[in-house]
Length: 579
Image (cartoon, rainbow, N blue to C red; front, side):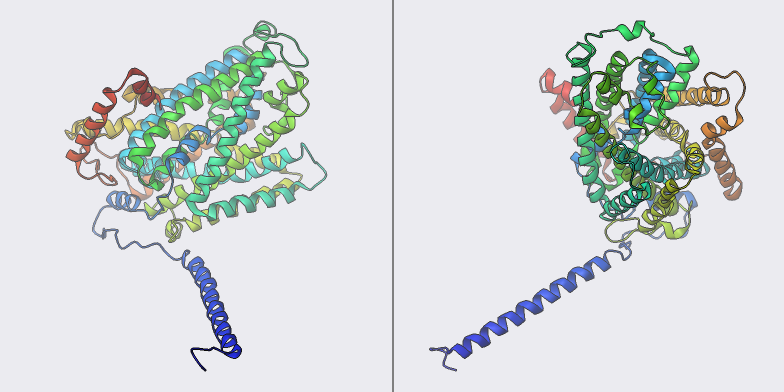
């Protein structure tokens, strides 16, 4: 071979060598990708977790949840969309129709306003706790640390079971929304497609969940804003049919239906509609810098309650009478019973009902996606605290609680009961397990906040070391505890004596109140089994799980941030207060 005058044969040898090298490199790349994929399911590195063999169960639980290997990849935009649109679902789009029929437009507004005020206080209390302690499990972990491990066990399993059951329910709801367009295809085919889609999204880890929720929530937010604008046009007589409406329906048929009992029944529907609001707190453990991103996300809840619930439902009450026969849908996911769709149909607008059905489908899939996320994280935290089988705490190198996700998927297969003639009976009792779950969760969050502040006072700690403080403060948390208790009382009454009946209905009562005895049984069982004690204020752990260890530096940084905000103009200060 002459290096100065390479022959054709030499060139061919060179090309063949380069091709072989590239082919080998490609093979290695493919193998390495597959190997990385396999390795991603291996256990996460826990070498940073301190040895806690000689500690108490309560101390072990605090350390285990504070050092969870969950991946911290959620960004501010993810948290804000989860906070704004995360819980907007069938409760608002469809369930509000039942509430409107039972209580009338005035009861609808009063009940949602009071529940919204309670949730504003609850989410701010949760924000204060999660910014200081961005630990896995959030409120179930807080119940263990600040109240009683037995109550943490009961609330954790109450919340986990809630999302376990919601997942198959939402899959069935999604298949029913499809039937609005096509009722010839077996709904079991649709639930199989939706089950697979949601499981694949969650196998992408918290980033997959965050991106999916960002898109889902964006669609829901745009849809609600669009309906508010459309509703104003319809009310003012700008639609093809109907003419000017104004406040006619508040006079005829009236502002209230079924009196005070009707108002009490709307509280329960309202609580269901707001389910999932607390997910933003659960996501704090998977956020890179919760001190910076969580306060803004927590403040966004005010806008969701005000704009997306109160304003949209006020519009609904103006353009749909509570005695409209279309409100009496056969199912909570019957799109034809949605007051949003009824208003559009009554106005003679042809295309929009199908668009709204598409929005409801996206909302349902969003809640199903949140169900797998919420359940898997809660179950993993329960296991880390010793409140669930040990294998459920397994978290892989991508920060996925694999066995928690698998458990959600397994229970999610209940969605195939949609092909059975016992579907309605089965799901009525499944719904009974979740009916009051959120009430117990929200009340517990508020009580944890009260106990936390009391412990700080007893231990001589200053509130200046709190990176984020609840705007309604302790007053808001006391209001939250009291109001949640009153909702339980109202549900007891309306469950035992349903609307339109003066006699007790035992079946209806247990289908609406089953969650309460389950929580109490779990609490008593764990209390007797582990002989746990109420956590005293003096012994309460106020430091494990904090990411900012240097208290003096944190206090100085907070003071500097406050001084900077105060130096700005009124509009900037107002913006920072609400956003």
